[in-house]
Image (cartoon, rainbow, N blue to C red; front, side):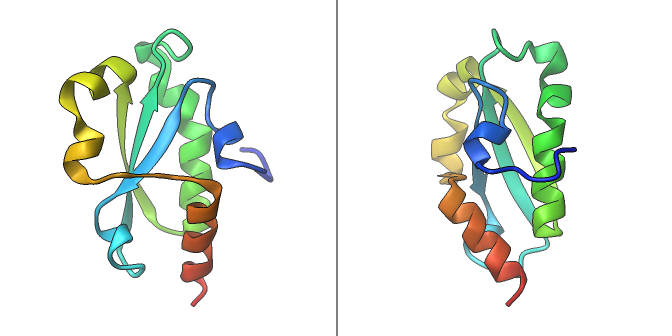
Length: 106
């Protein structure tokens, strides 16, 4: 695992974007992080998608000291299911990530 990740966006494989949803958006004391990663199946073939995103997943878990429940969707799966919209997921930006890290120490 990388010792330091400068940006959430650069930590993800090219063509991927992370979102969070669920109780962590309402309660900082939530037991877990619900995370969706939408990926480009050309850049991250589905057979290898989990392995290619594992470092990012481990970084989130170790930084927030919470279990991460991961959903991996290709762009096509997301477009058909509209899962992000249906659960009210929020893009995991650098600012939001830093807020979550700070809340961990409050």
